[in-house]
Length: 171
Picture 1 (tube, rainbow, N blue to C red):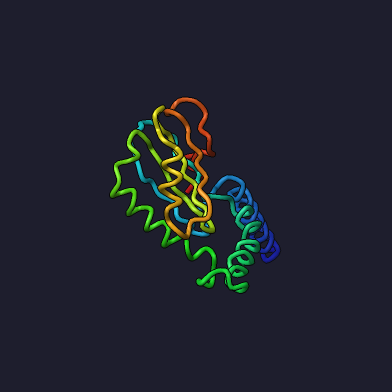
Picture 2: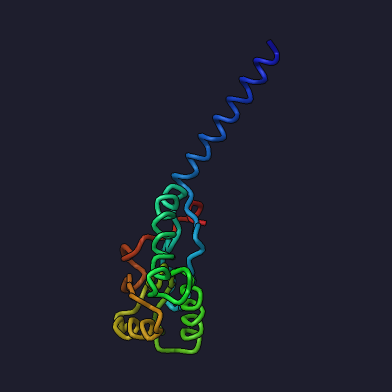
């Protein structure tokens, strides 16, 4: 009888652990693929931080196959020198950090950059006189960049043009 109780308690604990992990999946978002995500300007106070490349575990599983396929197809077809399309992102992010650090062209903004497969998202808050086209050209000047997606909000009030990070959920 004691053995049955221990097995039942063990089964119940295992079930609760699995249920808790599914509950966490619906709530916690992470940067599962280590896509580059960083801040390049901090001039507008109270600008909400973007969610960037963070996603739930189930979203990550949904992307995993297509990322693997997309990542290697470019190389297999001879369109990429690197064996994985996503390998370009690290070099691009380093170059963007360097360029933003050396430039004072984009003052009056709080900006984050994240990228995936040579596509660069620039998200954050900008002043009314901010030149979005100049920002796009600045980022697009890096030869490996395919697209630039600016998701910018004027000022820090109102609803941002991008999904925001949620403390306690986005890690």
